[in-house]
Image 1: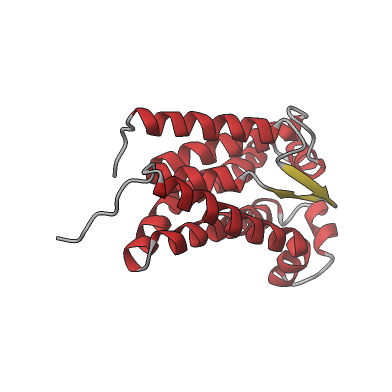
Image 2: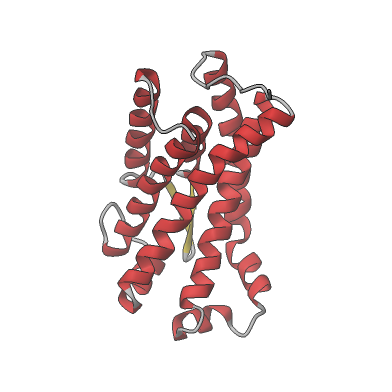
Length: 206
């Protein structure tokens, strides 16, 4: 696994980090609807994974995860749910906010590489964009239920529903909007960067 970046890749990583911070600390990154928010921060994470591989994706994901956690304490905006979870258990709140984004970015690097080997760059970029939003939601909600499922706050939210039914109804249109926007934008930006030779060439099997 590649862990060193050339100058152009470092520039892209710096740019994606700056975009993530800008989106985190302005209304550009989140569209709040109910207790959850539609987040567009998964897109720079996907772009980082496409151009920089698993390590770059993980770094961008870590930046996203840290800004998400900081919102629990009112830094760069406020997350109503995050604030409640932080009051319940700050350590678990950090894990629930940070780990899904870190893991998402890391896995996206491999997803892009795998899909591109089996098809083409355009499809690989779109699949990576879709997976960025899908995995972020899946990991986020899984840890939410696993770490806080027994709390009175979560029990009230679940209202006696089956876990799967609760997750699907809770994320609802938010998750769908994230997946559509991430698929389309990541596909377009990723393909443009590939044509500009910012995406490493695929390795041919020996």
